[in-house]
Length: 340
Image (cartoon, rainbow, N blue to C red; front, side, top):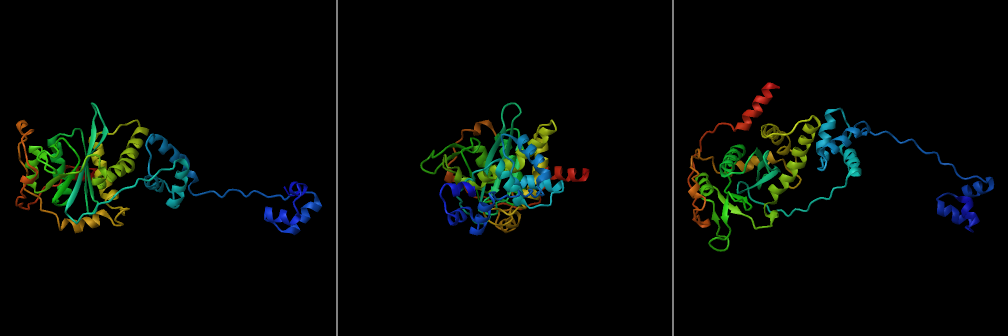
């Protein structure tokens, strides 16, 4: 390059400036007729190198979905990786660059609001959905996998969620679930017509159901964001592991694993928005929750489906605190730990 530039009319000083070397070095190579020789350094091996094949396979098994770096990091640490997570993130960034979502946040006081939604994972004959409830203040979440989204199932999931959180919030936010709301604005603006069986359960338990505006998922962005986290940090990684073994995920297996994941990972992590651990903030929230009500024994008659219920006809009932048995999935977890 030195000789080429010199033949092109560049002065020795200009060549030195262009190539970032001293003018004496330029003179030396012009006089000798040779070019500078740069020895290429051997690339220093990274701690992550032995695990790259595993990472690539894990991502391939989860295709078309993506496995977050936090999940991969936990897995390779079990195999002996003692490097930093930033090295893993940098490598995974070369495999796929993921655009972050922009979420609008609405903060609530402790115990005031819970957000509920369904997440559908499989449809058809082998249906698999998940009931997801997220507390507005603490961001503590509860998940239960089910095979249908009927009113009976919805009520059962609510009762399990209340036991998990240790009380009942004052309001619960929903989208347009047909098991919750029959007609929006049925009696005027913000005066909705609710499903009678669900309304009866709400009155008995002591919470006020509210619905978000259509096509405004950000209104219940806390639970929407958790659904995304559940899919990519729990569901798809677990399905990928089972797929590699020639197995598929069923409801019972999902519930056994998800409770452990909630207790040890999801509700124990430092939440990106609050900067706090959900379970720790839940302790503050529990002091503000309403006590668990007596066992609900309402009958879900079919003729109640279209019974008119006014939004503002709701009156909070006095609730009597009492001891409850542990939820079925807590028992499942205990049996699993005993077997281990």
